[in-house]
Image: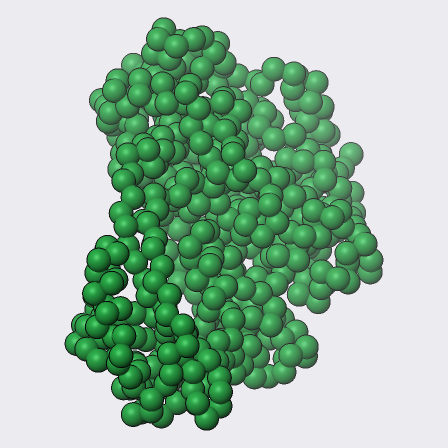
Length: 560
């Protein structure tokens, strides 16, 4: 008879944990959720406090029998499912099936699966947190009510088998709205004037761009305006009017949250959200590496906090000072946004001494790429700022002003290791900022020689289509969904063919446009960003015991 039975979600996690616990301990996996609402009916008693009718998930009968047998044969059962609302709910369902009393001290969580953390966590079990299970239940019940109320509209008007959801339908709406903006967009003409100038002493050339007239900024919209300016400066000398020299610092990005990891893995590695979360899950649950055996290489990967432990901070300091020198280290604290669930640390490596190159052979190519990204992002977050020497020059040609700017990198700091990516225009701007653009030494009052003048016509561009990365960013900024929902939401609307990918861009299909039109017309109070974000806040309030479940359910029903 085992002294302890520990139940986790996955076999990989079970195998890693087993190695850390001596004595007569058995570790088994529930293979995810074990009970859920029925698929064939609503499964919620709306008349009696929205009581959910949970049933055992089909196909899990033998597993449930096995778990019951193991639990009966053990002196003590510990429920060590993932450390979030979903994991808490799985633990709650397991406790129900295994007849574990509600006030039993049986719940254990691991923010990282390392020997030290697992052994320490096992010393501090707690009761199942009813606040967290209520919050998860609120989400599950509400999503079921919304789906059951909205989906029949699609079956009747479009075809059977289509689905609607509280978060997925709002995500589709964002993509359709963006497509409508693009289709309605009318480009506007604008011009820039670039002049190549020569500094005579050094014989170096540099570029300046048109700024305005009489020191005031002026936009150019037509060829006629360009011709007027060119005519006015044709025989004018270019005189250096003002020179400003300064120092600019660029600070590192914080360690990863779920959403920033998904965004960066999409931009830098070309990973889909689903792939990123799958690879991260493997890194968290355990990988066999030399000298340490099977260990979790990263902290829990569903988090919206940028907090890191003091131990990790200290380990990063030692590693940075050892590899780069003391001047490269800076003790940094990052502000977590106000609505973040701050239960977990940011995503970081569990062992700072396990550098990516060191364990490359033990990882799959995808694991190596993601681990390297997480490792470098975390280390860079604790490094000193990059420092640039910058110079900004005003050059007058008669009444008209041109501006030139230059910079040289004086101290690379965190950029030695890692630079954050951005979508579209911001990425181009970042790349430009990272490049040294030195101007020749200039003096106020100095005359510089025009070598070439080039007007350039451009047109304003429509807003870009969403990519997986930029949609996650938008969902997070608007408060729609939470770290655990971004990947399944986008995966679902792709699988339902409501949207499709063209290169990396997300484009609504005709089906997606029809579904969005029907839902926004029939359920305007639900398929809108403000309502969906408000409901997320209410789930958080349920988790924090500031709100009862029933008030949130009632709001949904009232809206429907």
